Image (cartoon, rainbow, N blue to C red):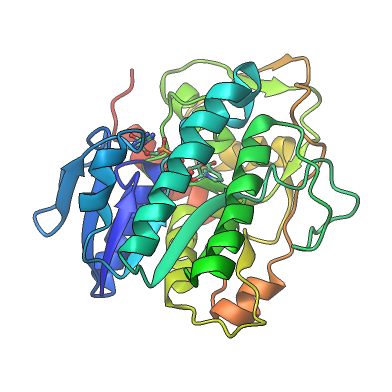
Length: 310
Ligand SMILES: NC(=O)c1ccc[n+]([C@@H]2O[C@H](COP(=O)([O-])OP(=O)(O)OC[C@H]3O[C@@H](n4cnc5c(N)ncnc54)[C@H](O)[C@@H]3O)[C@@H](O)[C@H]2O)c1
């Protein structure tokens, strides 16, 4: 088996690449930038390129069985500032990638969608895949749009795909300078001796999934061989909800330095609660999350401390 990981040098991509190699899959990475937090691996073929340069996509997906699409130019917050950019650089460029994939007869296209944004404000939790989809950010709309194009390419051309609606991954190599990923950002601030910022009252509930469990789920998506009526869209999370206050309490237990918290007003794009029902992934992908939150945060903290951020 050989796989291309588009966006393979990022947080999720580097863990996915490691897990693919561990399971005997040959790997090509196509990314705009080198990895910020790990060295290139001898056994991986690296192509530096931009999803927006359509001429580069042919070589990116040539002669591989699986394509994992992880590159994205926006975050939930930034997407609302420029939805036109969100559509052009994500929907349009992904469509070009899909064209290349069907021409190259790719066996499985795995797209990383977003369990945190496609549903919008949940009517009930845990959220099942059939829950209405009413995103309150452009990012959620473009993720959903791409899911619909995957369905269309499957219908028209038989391109096999899985859309993984990923919850909130955390763990080693999560960028501590990012605007996304509460646990990674909190740990980065704590390592620098800075206060962490809590939006609103901290009662917002999220589904946090350890990065190693996320990587295993994505490989399970690629290995999955669905029949015509089988699902192709899966929630991937821990299936458990923790409030930001509970996350901060867990962090306080794990880290060996003081934690300072400051509060700012709640953000309009934060839905009050998001916990995914992962029964379908357990049943069809034969996958289950394994990491306990406290152990996962402890591993993330050990990694963050090793960065010498101060
Ligand atoms: N991190 C999360 O909380 C989270 C949650 C749900 C879904 N996702 C999705 O998972 C995917 C990966 O996220 P991540 O956290 O690893 O992000 P990341 O920013 O760490 O990694 C993304 C990688 O894609 C590359 N990239 C971006 N635009 C590109 C382009 N036009 N051409 C080539 N390479 C490009 C970047 O250089 C980077 O290495 C994204 O699609 C994201 O929307 C992330």
